[in-house]
Image (cartoon, rainbow, N blue to C red; front, side, top):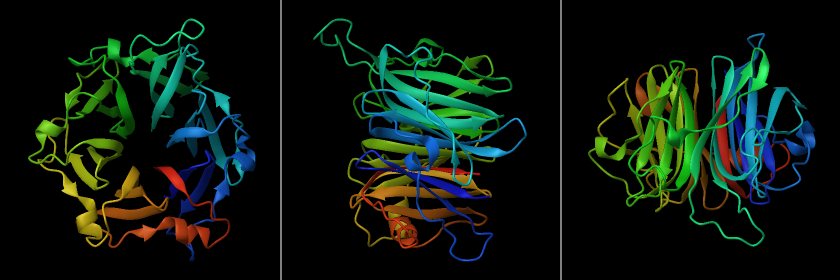
Length: 338
């Protein structure tokens, strides 16, 4: 398998690279400009991105990328092969035409692309202000056989709702665990709970706060990344202090009883300066990419057998930039295993 990395720069541009250990050095491809490479100009800078591997009708895994633009639209593209990108399509018009979209999380499950977004209804009158800042959580599916999009549905109005379901949402993470969609989202409630739910074939699981299941609380979090490996859900989060933490939902009901500080294990001398994080399963191992304050993307691996972290962090931005263009100044990163 390959690790695909999509980076969002401070200027709203998107770049893509691949890590493949089954080929001669270098392991990484040079940065590829997604917009110039065929997806086209979105008409507005991107503010949020996520990507996922999805099997097409022929069983070939393709990279799907969703991005939220500065003018509140949700766009979608596919990387069919080297240098072959589908033009951007507007996915947010499917039930969210009257909403501004803020964050997006995606996952590939059984040949389908599942998309979750946080969105707020646009003002209804000229100059009118919103009555309240309420970012609902919405979900839709892109079916592959036949090819079609399901309209977005409000998850807050399903059985997944929790006591404070009308409060705003922060960052969203989506993952495939044994063929089911797992969703984690940061709440704005006091203490910023870390909510988790599962989409079953006919219903949603009630939202549950992950933090009370842990013996330690790393503090307020502002960014998360999740990935499924076997029957387990791996969760990485960035705290307001800039540190990187990790925990595991081991099976259907049990979480690992503590958050582990990844930075202290992988590179204790590195200051806690992380902004955003994303993670993915590649050949049964967890690959983690995080953006540091300087705008560099750092990379490490949590090996599954035996469980251990690769040390120290690798500077993906410097390594890949040395092979060609070096856009630098990244704000966000998203990764997927193909």
